[in-house]
Length: 609
Image 1 (cartoon, rainbow, N blue to C red):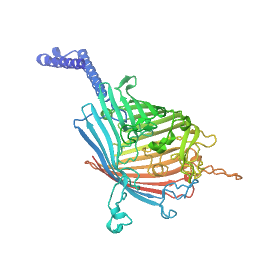
Image 2: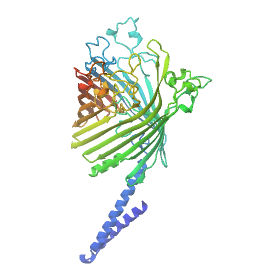
Image 3: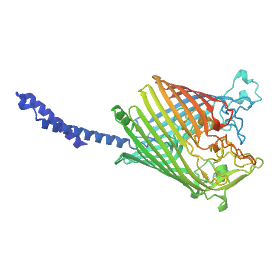
């Protein structure tokens, strides 16, 4: 770069000297430079400027290259030793008719839980919850920092954990008149989670050859249909992994500078042994057998503009094209089903008959691309899964009256799945109105149910019949594969059908035209219409099993519903955020016949810091 600066300075000095000489000469014709000389000087100056820009750009990319694409992103350490980020969130929900008035499916389950009292005539639920999230960062030095995430009262329902001083049956105080006091206890059977939940803790070390990250950290990629960090202020889910990764500096290729990030994930350590002197909770647990470990070996490769580069390109009227691939190979040789059920209390003596030879592997490839101009954005993500489970196992009670655990060998299962989404947005009025459309699909098959709750069986332990909303996606005669790809639960498709009733997009496709209107600074309105349709009619609640001696069977219908969603968001400049969203679903034939509409109204308040 020093040579480039010297060349540029020399060219500028030469031009300056020529102008000075021109001013000193009396005769203009004699002092004016030859046009060819002028052109040569101009070319050299422009060439030196361009070379200088290229080198500056390369150095900026090199300094920022350690930031992994949409993962554990290093934003660059700051001088403050402690950075404290997070938010306090309160949300309320009104859920009306999410059972769609369908009664129970063929397996005896409602589409959505109904009120306990008089469920036949009541279909409205309402609730409120809160979360206090802390995300501290310790900048140990300019090159070393430790990050973490801690949740307090994570989605605790308002009105839960009441105190015995007011709510016990022996209390002398009538609750309706005196209210109730909150009390949090770790052994409160009315709570399904601890009041304080440490979720993530990891370190980032900037080395001369890249960024080293290790610990329990968020995982994200692309639009988020495969893996999603779930760090939005209204998110409930998010992927957390035990990971060791190294983000290498960018490598110049014919298609641009590519960042490579090799990854090792510790998916499952299998059976653990505690210190034999003290038992669980003291000392260091160790791996009882490495033969049951599950690991993921992965590589991310991406061409990605930094935020500053993207802004400069778009402001200059240029285009930005970014792309990348995320490949992972996952494997587990053996498996102890009892360990997952009983943990440290499980009795697992040695012996080949007491463990499953899983022989499991999976190849997962996720491709992502984004093309942007000042007014247009097109972004897409596609995922493919190809794998094999040598022996699939389930562990459960022998029967409703016999709680003894029973291990069932379900044999070989193949994994053949795919999913994808395509998003387009156009700024019809810059900084005012954005129009967009989104389309997505997830693979499936005609096994009964969608497959978001694969453990749901019939009351007698058999596979659920057709017409069930949920169930395993393999096990029927001739069905030895799992083909339903499930979108990450943190990826929001709509407000009613996929978020609440079915849960995750699978075995279906959707079309979603939408708009965003920035009414005033800080006040925005979003609206969308979502049409959803199953890929296989046999998966839907409308399908029925064939009945003996009846020629006409109900094969089911594919159309699931059409939904309208709206959202109004206010964001102040000092950390306060307020939102309200309403969605209404008109179910179609695939969900059954003679159904009613479902409504969801959510409101939220947040203080972000």
